[in-house]
Image (tube, rainbow, N blue to C red; front, side, top):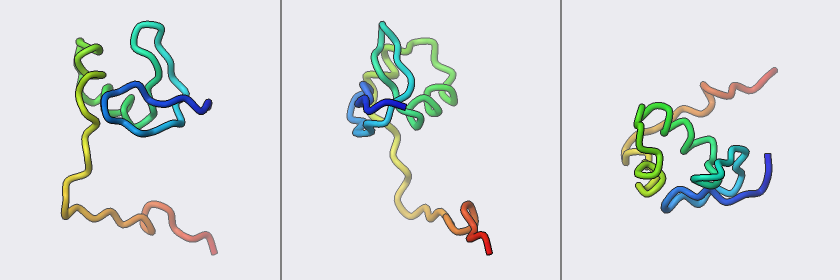
Length: 69
C-alpha cells in the first residue's frame, strides 16, 4: 500500500493501493463503494463525492474488534 491520495472527488484518504492510468488512485473505501454501486460509468463515479455515514448511525466497534483475552 502506497501513500497516494485518492483521486475521487472530496475523498481525503491517502492510503491507496489501487491505481488506474485512466482514473488515478482510489482508496479501499471508495473502491468498495464503486463495487457496490454496480456503475458502468467510472468517470462519473470518481466525480461524485464520497458517501458519508448517515448521522445517528452508531457502529459497535467493540463487537467488530473484540479484545482478545
